[in-house]
Image (cartoon, rainbow, N blue to C red; front, side, top):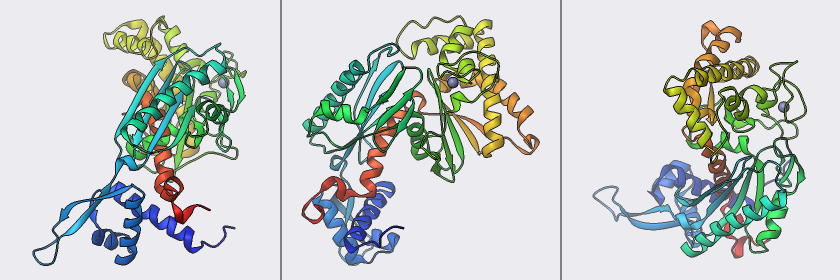
Length: 404
Ligand SMILES: [Zn+2]
């Protein structure tokens, strides 16, 4: 049972409520905030003053609400008050994206690198260098870094920030958050880590194809295939936080050996390597280039490319049908490299859904294409930091009232 909220924790929650309100609804007067949140005017005034002192809100311009009385000042978000640093480790690239409280992208970088067979320490060094560059850019711009979240391609213990298993990289029990912290030094903001597909689904839920949906599955195609399951507007994590390992659903019990050690996983049929090999497309080039070439060939009517994508779509559809029967989602969002290939994968996948979903005649889950594609995970990682700031601004800003 949660302890009763003390006055101080209640005040902290209220600061978060007001900050979230202004971030989500835009600039408005104290009076309008009071009206919309149900707090009384003096409470709002004191909360806003404190958020201004923290550097998270600013008072600018004036809003004239009528012809009588003095115009009320308008309160707006101060982007530089906090920024979230999102990092992503994928099998074939590293990425960073920094987003501030106002939603502005402050810094971004993307490094293609094939991490298969590489040493984890080398990856951590490169990741730390990318994080340093991002923190340096924030320092120069006078923006407060509120935290770092790392998106990882495997099972993650989000409490300790440890990568437990990454089947395509053969790394196990890698304390990514701690190792990154050691490299960045004591001045680094708090570091967290989470599964990449979970973070991608959260990004879709906030600003992508999942906006406005309550129940959907975001399926991310990378070298591995992951999924983020959103039910009732919340991410489903499972008993240990390992839910959503969609790529390891068995679609072919006597099929091919998977990188995870099992046999016949979806990944062996619809993973990036399987698609490229079926289409006899070379894996040469930086991360997205083979996918772009495959999409271009299919667009131009190349039979081999089209057949490979139809076959991949068929296997994908078999797995989606199982998920549809189990979860009854409103939609599947195809993300990662599935997004640029969706047009060619979807018809065969839809045919399987029609065949296998109970009650298909009454309607099927929609197959949507992610507007973020391969960027969803790194956006979601940066977004997680901003969500934490909005939930408890005092945790970032500190200050004399909240030091204990
Ligand atoms: Zn597997």
